Length: 242
Image (cartoon, rainbow, N blue to C red; front, side):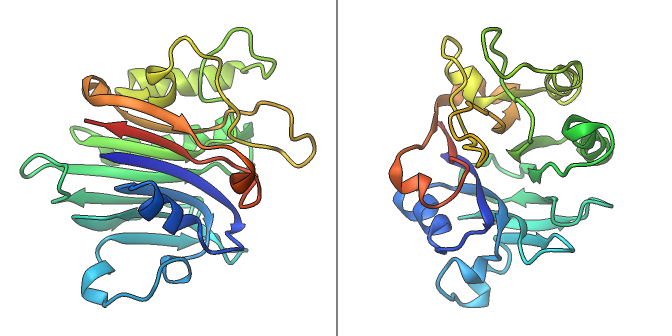
């Protein structure tokens, strides 16, 4: 089973991003940010086949937003107040990789700029998620706009607020960072090639899953290269589970 997160850059101009994830890389659960809706990225399908497998919300001042797509099962949308399009949530049930009767809360997040820095905004979003998540399995993927992995030698220094967010994800929500858990000895790889300086190794996109999934985590990779450079200023992150 594969989970991926991908910021498409202002909608996804070539409209191939979803297909590359779902078809070329066999992703089962896809989190997207700065994306146009599903019907602009995937071929039209009968409503009965896709209506319950995708949720998407538009950022008010833009044509793009955030979304979640699952190849199997049913997604029931969950509203997150005040962050329409910046974060979209759903309850996933009956996916072919879930245990019987399991229900998983899934959230695709693109942290907006605002009071308290990006970390402050992520904390406010987590406050809303916390109201819904008690006693439930939780998966969060997205563009946090802050460092999401620990590496003491990184030239991108984490602030106390950044560290507090990562601690909160681990301790309060019981989540692990897939990339760091799968690659504990490696320096965090670049996921954002900021247009102001594409060489800075920003590692701000991540997938967080329950600690109980750690035994099943087989790998977590960041796709890079010219083809990805041409599609977005972010690189996709893919986690694979047994």
